[in-house]
Image (cartoon, rainbow, N blue to C red; front, top):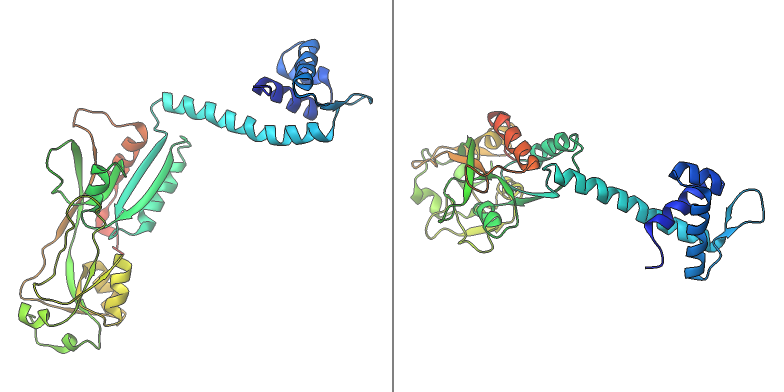
Length: 303
């Protein structure tokens, strides 16, 4: 390669300092070494990089273009060096986080904001999953950490879980839905004749899961909990929502909470990641695990 990092550093220093001598002083070299580096680069490229006719070293048009592009390389090289040093101290190069769609993205981004204050250089990739999609993301190596997954993971082990909290569910309908004024508690026979709104499981490899649906019930499937909430507000179907969400929407007059003869039990949710209980996680993963355990999940409104 004709263009070296050493040569780009020399060009950069000469341009900023205005002379070969000043550049040599900054680079802790003798002036003749800097002069030789530039002359060698000019010979190799067969291009004149500096106009040496004045008192101040001035880049030619070709030299300016080389330096402008070269500075991108110098910045990238510096970032790479810093990144490698951070990895050597135990910080992962990248951490991929999947979160269950029932958890507000705001909660995850608040944690991400705190994490970036560590200035550790670990890149974050954050994506939503639904139902068994969190476990599927771990199994298929789409995620290093999943937040909000169930405790019934895939067979074979190799995963660690931490209990975070639980979600209570309420059965909801739109105010103008036929079930809004039906006698309570609603039986399965009352409900089965009305369309349900369900969120599609995001699993790609594991068998998809469903919850709260009745055999023979018509189903409208949507892609997210936010879409399910909107569909139920519009009267397109019925179904369970996190009780915190249901109570908020009921108070605003957008939904009606109905008691059912067979209430849906609370769902316990966890954080999960690959590894054994004696295997020490990287520093970025360890930071997230600690913060997740410290968080008061009972105060978080789901969706």
